[in-house]
Image (cartoon, rainbow, N blue to C red; front, top):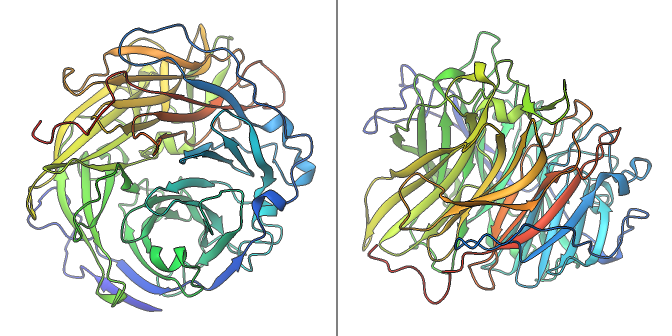
Length: 549
């Protein structure tokens, strides 16, 4: 493993000047190979969580909207903590759902903090649920009795494979555990890798690899994470993993990791987050296109100014030490405040007096909600992202909304213009709170945002809203629709959840699939349910949106 200290000559944190953009002092690059690899038994042959398998339960769906955005096409219950017994390592009573799901050509795979299940597209369980302990049990560095949170899943449509990741590696959880399905069948075996992202050479070996979020790009799988913890971290890591080698089951797959420090607050911790672009659509980027990484820099959380900092990650698998992470545009958005609550944690309103939802820690620390999506339309490229903010810009009002952005880059041949903020908006159409968003774009340029909504007369529910390309910029004007209405409140102070997930069906590049957390009834203890559903825009058909628009 080799280490490189970059940007030693930089006198201070200067993100806003594009021409002089550099990584901050103390940024370190490390390179290496996976330090362990194991091929699992098929997921369908793993021991399942008892009593957890059952038929699809459709449940209620919304009334017709009639506004170019469809009602749910399918809507069914996913994993439910009440059917994941804690004694079998299928659940932990204090864990939130942290719900992640991805759609493939024929399947839907869902993970929560401690369990995994595979469904067909009608909601029938094909494999699992299995505990994450069972799934990783024979991987040398991710197995044993380790139960780590923050599991996520992606579908690599370009290889027709499934990718599952979580923190791992004892004793501190300093590794990233990544599993790649051996075939297109998510119920089959997986190549399971452990990568020492936090290591002795970047001086992070004793720190937990918290909140990792993976993405798929053509040249690599990427992951961002926080060394230490999301609310007491040191900065960010952004890593590239040798996708071609992992798809081939090569046990010596390479990786490149950059550690990027962030400004320290008076308590000597950072509040910083990055996401790497997750590729969507049938049109691949040009061969020399780098991976794009975005960091939300909130002036209220220690950064010099409110910015969207864009980075280019150029990975070189022939000479990994030649890889670079280059800060490029520092974009100036409309003012925002990531502290949605006056006390940073509790302010999401619920229908019962003196009951508020525990705002996930990452929501109040400027965290982008997965995924950062990338789509190539030929003469232009787009990036979509979202994060929760104080809806009115003032945390004292305890009103959460969702800030979302579409960034665009114009491409002529191999010449690319700088990224710019094409549109942005804060979605908060009424007094209810909206948070835990996930945003995506279909092949026609339609945008859909899924999220949780709650208020004094609204139980925590899962809704979605959207826009067409010709709608007024910065707006989501299509009528807000319901994936599932909740019927109960969260009765404990456990985190509600750290994220939800929206993905696009590769079968048509039009259908959105969304999963998140809700409560059908009020119960004690914290009895969360998850929901999985799909919908689409009625104008999504034929070829991609005309490239000159």
